[in-house]
Image 1 (cartoon, protein in one colour):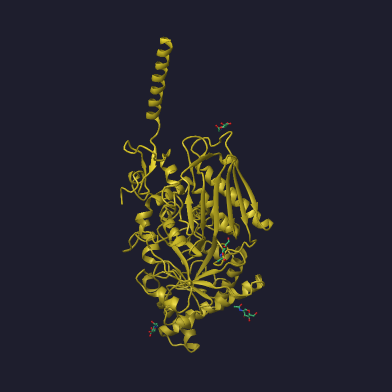
Image 2 (tube, rainbow, N blue to C red):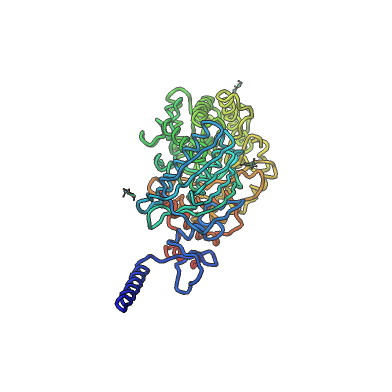
Length: 593
Ligand SMILES: *[C@@H]1O[C@H](CO)[C@@H](O)[C@H](O)[C@H]1NC(C)=O
Ligand SMILES: *[C@@H]1O[C@H](CO)[C@@H](O)[C@H](O)[C@H]1NC(C)=O
Ligand SMILES: *[C@@H]1O[C@H](CO)[C@@H](O)[C@H](O)[C@H]1NC(C)=O
Ligand SMILES: *[C@@H]1O[C@H](CO)[C@@H](O)[C@H](O)[C@H]1NC(C)=O
């Protein structure tokens, strides 16, 4: 009896020892505190507090929005219970009106799985675990992606003894893909096998702005294809939906135009620094599958030069003037100089061929960006051919006349664009609006004389204290906002510009007005190329993504923890997103405010 007793006591002591050793060797546990910060549990926090295995685990449900970036705008509730699941055992069921939309959702499912697999820390398979069943219902068969696309979705998640059921409902496939992006924000890696996911959740969501863009310049410095697709991956993770591709400029013309191979032959930096037609098709397709439009900009009449220099050789005359002229400060604002010749009819013919190509690579509903800023009048005014033609046709050489010439340039090109789209897509009856940069021509006093509001959407790039946006809205123009002193990601690396950190990007409030289509952060590439472009853009562009999706009243101070988590997620998806704070502040949420 006493021996048994002793043995029993011995066993208890042994168990206790093992338990103590285990507790000590286990990694710390995390709690979501009353200020919605995920912190390492300390001895003071005893009792009923829910504990999580890691900070990322805690973050999934800490605060109203957990780890979701950008925040949902309609409804969001997230359980603080978890399930452990095997990503190989996620089963999908798609209910969509036709083969094309079904196929789209299937592709989105595939992308989703490949994204969550990146969260696997260890062997992710989990024998005997329950299945996760994802059922997606899409009601519209339209694959049109434009400013009218309905990106709304609902996502609900519940777990029973049988399985975890995820239900996605959306009008379009694009809403459905956003839902999967949100679902991935409800999942994290685990130190044990499998992945962790919240046990239940309900999200209803729709973006505030239909245009949530990033401008990528590939003309000042060439950006390889691989980096463009990674940019699209990161945009998709942020629910951004427009890549404004500033593909050409006066420095280089890397875009292959199949009808006019001279453009890239004369304009690319090197024969391998080119986007072939196949590349462009692939970019458009890759983007679409991630809910992103590609809007290609062919800038003109300014910011054009190299690529256009073969006219005289081929008997087409001077298509671009002031080309590479020195001293550059007398002929342009940035070397190399170049400006299209508005009196050369052949130049318009080539522009039309370029539009034919663009209309072919993009979706029928897609439009173009026509550039149209920073015309440097002294260039035209110092070109004999141009001043002669102006005086011959009854113009004087006043600023007013030059504006007229400039605006006729846009009018002629718009005619070409209309002809091209009407011929290629006779079923599209409404002429498509194009996008143009703000400039002297878009001055509210004179814009209506040059650019009809039914046809031109103005992308403004003025400082936040300027009244231009408001003035244009009052005149009935649709606008896309690229606030120069917040959303120009190239600033801080040249001249007297300053760098805008993610908080400045985030805190750039947007006007709420039906004519504000949205905005774009701009990555001009004078001072970035493949070695730095990714960390220059990310995670800062993500701050704009939440601004454009939700336009929250929250200041950046209150969203820090979620933003840090978002940045980590980009890293786990292979995006070289820059650090924004010391790791200590990430681990000690709320202590670095
Ligand atoms: C992962 O775990 C499963 C089940 O435990 C096992 O069958 C499989 O071989 C493991 N895979 C690797 C790569 O270790
Ligand atoms: C978008 O689709 C949802 C259904 O998913 C619908 O409730 C909503 O009214 C639609 N929004 C618009 C603007 O049509
Ligand atoms: C263009 O040049 C002429 C002659 O040099 C000058 O008189 C005129 O003011 C210039 N026009 C503009 C808009 O600068
Ligand atoms: C556009 O088409 C119209 C009618 O076919 C034609 O008169 C006009 O010259 C064309 N314009 C351009 C720029 O091609």
